[in-house]
Image: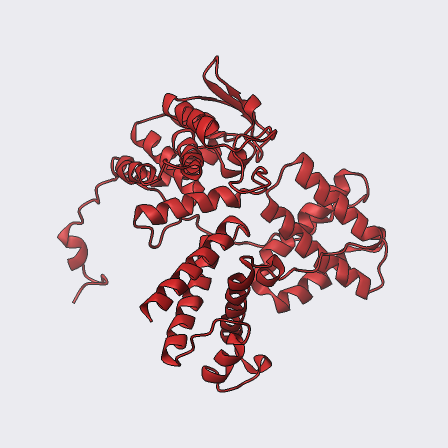
Length: 424
């Protein structure tokens, strides 16, 4: 049985690697599957199930769920059953089909004249203003709700939308989703302000819609000490091509604070060896930035290019490890590389974020602790202005201690005064 357990553990390990490297699932998602597969191993052992084949799912339904049908299972039980199917598929084919992992959401359709205006607005915000993907998706979802409301009322033209229609829509939506009211109202205000500025509407309804007050305190960014960052770098195995690539990626973020998406888009033309600089236009802000190509960063890149990078005509520096050796299509790949490095290094990450942005935050904290002025930090991090950099000030608790004020002493007569709260 020990050999069977070892074989099963190896199968789970290989399947987990496939989910990470080929299907690009997050560390948290892969860990969820591993949890279900460990549970499967225990069930197989208890019920003496040794055959790992297509009938395994039926055996588990019979032994674990009392013969219930799939439609009768709870949500978590269905997840467990499907995780079994994925492992069975991998055991037979060494592959897991993506459609079995990630359910495809139906694309949001913006039909009609109002839908065309929404698409124009989204394209403007995405291309010209360079808003983040999350913000763009938020606009799409909320404005699609508004479009659906207009279609139900048979309103086909934006000129037929008046303030009463907007207020009725907001009131009805507020009865259903109170937590999303801020996003909904914000999306409507920005959209109708765009229509007014483009001379599509003669009335700026954005000024007629009351703001929805949402007070939200920003969280303190997750940071790691200099010793933890060095431990992270030392834990990466640089004796193989994958390790050389991952080390260069992590080191670039640690030393230069480059965003994950900019690492994905880093081209050979961006690295100027003669001037020892890295120069590129940031994907998020569109702002050009010039950073020093530090010696250890340059050496790590050269080591990867000479002994780790696959032969390819791709203009991008970092490539996928397996054929067809394409460039990174999304920033999540870099995030996963950093997260796996944190976990393998054994760094304490409980209650903290441990993605690529945590390295960027840690760099800013070290600069603050070294009394680097805000404009310099802003320039290195590629912020559009120093207001964005002020967000990091709350991390520097040592400097904040110097701003503490002594609590003034209260005279005892205050507590003893006649008619006072503490008077007895």
